[in-house]
Image (tube, rainbow, N blue to C red; front, top):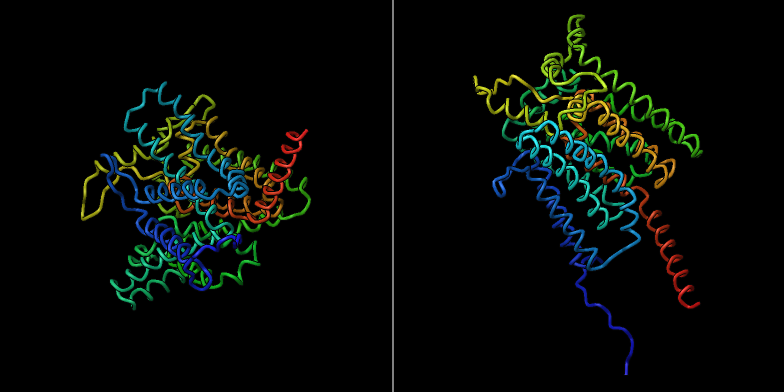
Length: 449
């Protein structure tokens, strides 16, 4: 009688099971679909939600199902180590706002908007945790490919519809004018947030040069996408983030820990001064001395009545800014095919956070977005991983100084999460596996005794 274990009968394609290939194609297609239709909404149970939310929820459900079918506890725990701190950034504003909503008697539409705004980033992070569970360290590159392909589809369709020649002319004008002269075709090629997310990957590849050789094609394509959606603030943020991160890329953990402490204090101080200056109409002053603020003077001045720079200002609750913007936008008249908005989106992460969370909520949230992320990465990813995290954090903060990146752009949220979760995952997973073995060994010894 042959007692040898039976081999699994799997259909293979280039030594890869067909089932694994099909699963990858499904997951990757979901990512591209969600990234391409990120600005489109769908109505479910009477609520309008952006397309990428159901995609993120479905991907997370796939991850949960995979864990139940074939659990990998070491990888799961290594992912959780990084997922928890990231989620705190998006959970805290809602918890803080619960008190504000009750005390101020906020409108139902405002509360609903705040809850929905929290759901998007939370499930975005959870979806990336599922992607990392499936594909480990490769997850961040897979996500990059999904963004690039989605962006290229838009670029190709715009070039065909508007004419390849005109597209090339506008592209050259965009580069030579450093985004000062942006034609209608170039404006149509940008998928909201992908440009900022690609900037994060530029930082990653600059700091992790060993990854460049393995990913040359996607780097070339993402550079092209980045240039078509050129953002001056993003270029400045990339340069500043890399320059600052060089100081963090040291082997001495105590030195890195001190640098994190100093940097966080500087960020808190500078960002509060920035909010104070906005509240005192500083951008209007910049216009009077000849500095073009790209309408930020007018945009920020419309928000000044909604906050005060004081420890007694406790905020208006998450979702207030977005709700007010949408109400104003929907009520605005259409003149010559354009919405005449009396109030623009804040175009400023710091201002949004301050108005919605107040001074103390703002300080706590900034602490979660800087100190907690950097210290957690130092503990889990080591000094080099902490340098990457610090660079990405600083990049997001600088970009958010004149735009809404950290919360409104799902690509930025998911890119930050997937890069940190997958960073050196093989090593972290192996350490977790050894710890689990040691724990099981001790338990077995205690039982035998």
